Image (cartoon, rainbow, N blue to C red; front, side, top):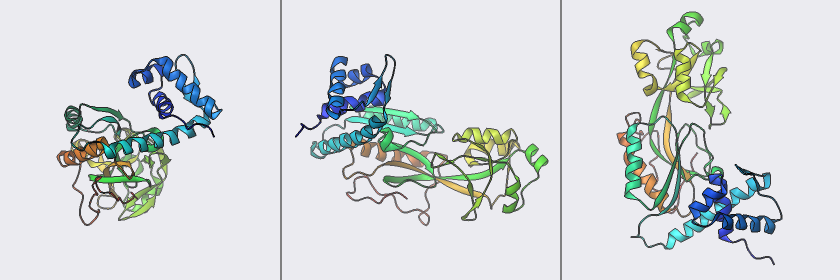
Length: 321
């Protein structure tokens, strides 16, 4: 029977994939570059397959490497969780923490990140700002902040608040194409849309608690671009009210079907469902939840419309839906 794969080999492989460089992986692991290279070679020889395509400037996963990376990431998460379960409760929180957040956040969020880093100097905090809807497990993230009406299975979500959405268009667009008076009128209008779950082109908008099918003429996962396109007369967009309040006030945008075509996006902090939540993840989630009430763009979650958030300290968690 072959010897089991060493954790050091898995760690060298995962770190090299996530930082995109053998030299950077070696620096983060505190070992010579040649050591990382030898560990990767032993791993590929053991598996009898090429996991990485290496050039002088970059690393790229092979198809088998992509599959192996997902499993290796889960194994290392389990090892980290096992270590955390016996770590002294009063000791300092440490470890890596990779966070994905959307770009449209206020300066107060930046201050919160800095204060978290100051309070936990042994935590290696990596914050990635992107409008891309990342897959936490596949892409190796520990936590994400999401603005979405739905969440994929396998994630734990704590609701931070709700962001009201409004449909808007420019006066010039409405003068040329007419102002919708009822939901059926949307069928003949140019709709500016995002992506459902960050991947699939959106095809429905909320109407009175239901959904109405809309035809898109422009799609983007950058909500500020949707608002800008509406200001420039490209069509009707459904965007967070706080993003367009100034344009509505000065008449650059007009609300379309007020009281009818409206909705809200739930803002949540999410993390992969695990039996043991790493201490740095638990601490970060608690910090974000405590910060959320000070965020001016978030409306407090209404008890009649949202279930109470579950603490990551609880041993059993409900899957996000």
